[in-house]
Length: 65
Image 1: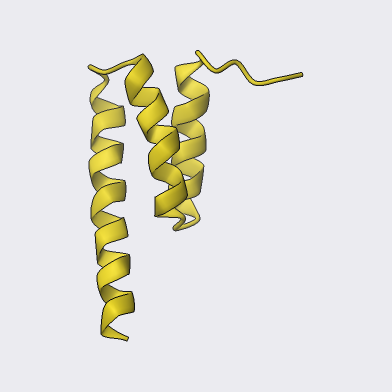
Image 2: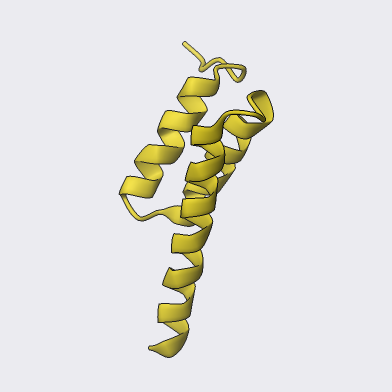
């Protein structure tokens, strides 16, 4: 059975799961897809901001190493 591309909650949950695994670059497209479906959802917008911040921190740490 294929996933429903219009199911916002599925994209959001997948993004959160990727974020929990510290896979921020993979989380952002999922969260972006959720945002595209529900552009006014504050939880989604906050999750995107947080993932972007964590990705920037991770990249900065890699550059220092």
